Length: 158
Image 1 (cartoon, one colour):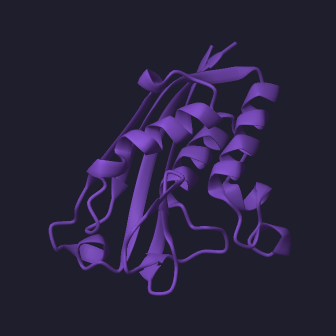
Image 2: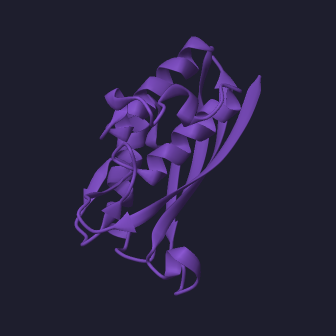
């Protein structure tokens, strides 16, 4: 049996925060704002898995009203979602994620992001696709006000 999940996540870019994407700290003058480390890409991946399992969204499992999740490492959170997936009897068939940010360029960091995600999801890196695009000066991404990530995942029964 297969299950498909999809998700989109958005965070505002602000000064005074680290930019963490796919578990990689990327040098930049702005970072993403959020209760956790605001890793928009990892959030989209995790929530797509939860969606495929019909387990709700990240807020249900890691509420921003709970102080224990303040500054949370999103790669750790993805590991927790992985445990839920395994408990439901599924594994990653493949996932395809898209990171949308005007600056900085993501290309030099994509392989490290793929490695981080594949490691925490206990799957071959060939099953993890991560791409990036810019906003070409249009909308909140293009105007460098925020970043967005999307993910589609296919889970298969173990």
